[in-house]
Length: 385
Image (cartoon, rainbow, N blue to C red; front, side, top):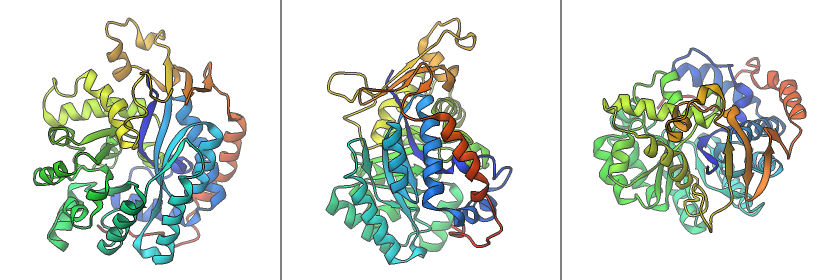
């Protein structure tokens, strides 16, 4: 089948796996994650990104769409491992103009590094980046021919807060600042309202939304991405894991299953989100989310040879009455046997061919405790949408 695409993640956050559990979203950010990210260094990001690339490739993921700091280190890990990546260097307005300009320049540099690396601009979110900085980002995106990857309308609470403070929804902010016109990948969108859909329809040819439903359940966010409404106005939707600090794995098979189940529940319709639709979101939809709609996501002449060979012979897949049902509801990441990216074998017989997994794991274990240390104090940002 086509290699899977993780359409929204923060790959180095595998280093925080299991370190922020059983917390409401405000405490998850303010008491754990953003204080931990004070400890980020280029080396720690590189080590985390290597572990993430290994995990994704072994699970049949051939492309990931990333939004994080020290993106040059993530690029190095992706190049080494053989995976394909679209990278968006993250920035907050609170970091100042020099930091934002540096993120812009990193984006430009990343796009020249390797044919498998593309780059997007990465403002964090509508509530952490000012309208002025979003306008600057949109202008840079148009000038350089790039997309913008950011978080928006993540929850209904964020949408409500935006209306109370500014009189507009986050989606309206994206239109008013030119982000939608430039082209955007919107992470989550659980707070997208019915009145936002006509706005998104105007930019459907350049807008995608990434859905990561395990996160919404775990943080008790109350809603999931309104995929049916988005598709009704022509907006492509991809499937992702978000970071492993909340998703715990970078297993896109798990995310695919969660999308199908949560969408049926959201719509109270067992006939919605069919097997074929779910697989289409996981392949074609996620390829669009990666900005590679015409290159990956389908096995046909002229596309990149990004391929996963999946063994369905294990007891949890048998008997097979419908292979699509197995892929959506039964398959495990460990069922992936062989993976090719751009025609190159990067996993053979369930073993990485590009990296020494023992070394990758040892390096991550040695450094992980330094990243989750909260004794330094401070935080990279405060969550108060």
